[in-house]
Amino acid sequence: MLPPSALPTQGSFVSAHGSMNHIAFDVPAEKFDAYVQKLKDKGIAVSQILNHDNSETGSSAEVTDDVFVRSVYFFDPDGVCLEFASWVGQAVRRR
Image (cartoon, rainbow, N blue to C red; front, side, top):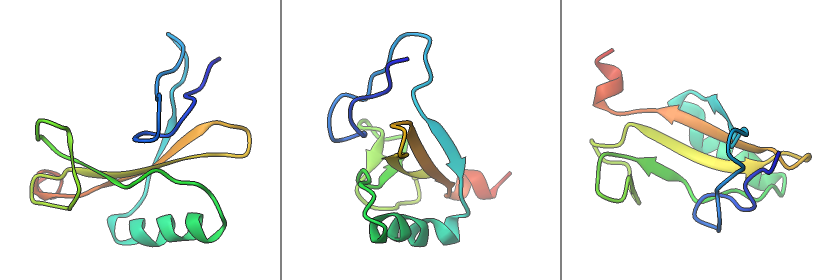
């Protein structure tokens, strides 16, 4: 298995065809920022926070009404890429 060589926004995020790219964990929206800070406090390198939306670029620098999920990526000690994902926005609240 060839994992991504870099976190999103920090280099190539491609992995071998048919391999696992990353594992995502659903975290509560109200705890997302605290979880990111805990990673940083422990010295874990994290990607910038991606606010996924339906824009042309697929993400926003800020949380807007169009953002449906917030993500941050990091590597575990074995080099596996992990993601904390938090579902937000009106589309999610309507479920």
